[in-house]
Amino acid sequence: MLGSTILQLGSVIGAANDVDSGSTAWMLTSSALVLLMVPGLALFYGGMVRSRSVLTTMMHSFVAMAIIGVQWVLVGYCLAFGKTVGGFFGFDPAYIGLAGIAHTQMYADKGVPELVFVMFQGKFAIITPALISGAIAERMRFRSYVLFIVLWATFIYCPLAHWVWASDGWLFKWGVLDFAGGTVVHISAGVSALVLAILVGARRDWTRGTAMLPNNLTMTLTGVGLLWFGWFGFNAGSAVAAESPVAGPVAGLAFATTQTAAASAALVWIVIERLRHGKATTLGMASGIVAGLVAITPAAGHVLPINALFIGAAASVACFFAVQMKNKLGYDDSLDAFGVHGVGGIVGALLTGVFAFTPVVGALGGNFGQLGKQAVAVVVAIVFAGVGTLVIALFVKKLFGLRVPDQHERDGLDLAIHGERGYHHDLG
Amino acid sequence: MKLIIAIIRPERLDAVQEELRAVLDEQDNYRITVDPVQGHGRQHGDVEYVRGQPVQPRLVQKVRVMVAVNDPYVDRSIEAIIEGARTAGDGAVGDGKIMVMPLEEVIRIRTGERGSKAI
Image (cartoon, rainbow over all chains, first blue to last red; front, side, top):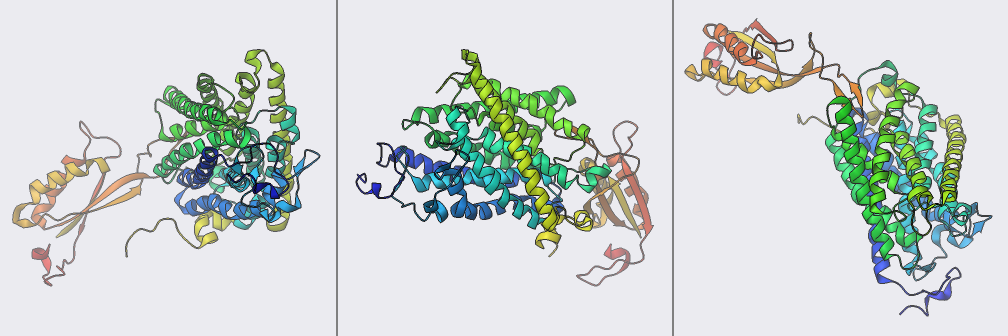
């Protein structure tokens, strides 16, 4: 095998330095699956806004692929997974631009080439800031959004990923469980979304109480289908990235819990709607699926499918009522990035500490300390992401302003920002 | 010659077409133009639920039917449209309107024919 040739660059540790073809194949597949979630998210969000801003909204997701796709290679991976600086962020000059990572180099003891791991993690870094965009749809300046996600990925996402996932990150070493990103991805994105929505301010028509209806829910449903599909890479892929070298069974577990939680959450959401309004809506179905997927993310490889049923159901109840709160509290989280990702992430992170059975047991097994650790991690993620977003957003506001001019908002952002319309009536 | 414009419920279009066909089929002069329109009169838009929040659209979806007819056909066309578009029973708010206006000239583009034979 390749074992003898791949020790040439420093950071290889552990015994298993051969390529594990099964793990590597699954990680390549998972990386592609997670990337597919980004256009999925674009469709999901794009269908929910008004047609005059459909392109701007979809572009928020797509441009993250371009921007964070570059940022991750240049500095992102280095800051998240480089040699730890006190457990708070990573740094390794050899990782800048990935210049010092030979294509034959293995990642830790996983039997997977490090570049595959870099790409897998990079897709997470891409989708996380894109999740935030749902909160500021139809009113944020494009250049401000672009600058915001670069700074956010660099100064919020990378350190948080290091704390929770790097083998020497302080939360990881302390024993916090976050299988695929409850704190790193969903709580951080959700809380940042809330802060940003408040700073940017409500949409003009939201304040005026004008009816705003989704332009195309068929797109939203297509998007949520892609998200569900891609989420198998997100969660079951995290088994190989984060777990022991013998990760097959854990990947299978994560796959099963992901499927189960999504189904259970979707079911519960439409039942709640049917009971409250007499109608089960398709957007409710889509929202439930996402809420379930979000909540199972931190728990996926730690709990049983029967627990996933409960986690999905609990997430749906919590998210449904969280989404109703925005009108009472008066913030325009337009597409419910906080209501679904923030709240769902918190529910999932805490319930992980209740139901976990591997590699440690949770509160249900008498280990209340694990629930305490999860709660601390939740608070840490909320405070860090919230304060960090406040600082970054105020800086961006000073530099460019956060909102488009009033007239652009009235006309729709697509034409003003991108010089295009999403839909043309075909009259020649 | 008159131009009849009817604003009706989209779901009544099939019935209106059927009624019009029955009275206008003579002399091969059943012609119709239809487009989707939005507006409101006394009827409000149907309440939709967006993530649990009731939202009432400002405008109601309607269909606009245009038929140009010769004078002897005006009244029976109106009757036909009412027959097809009125909600069963005594009708309902939102059944729509019929507007009739004089038609100065009609020209068939293919032949250049004018007036009632071009209709």
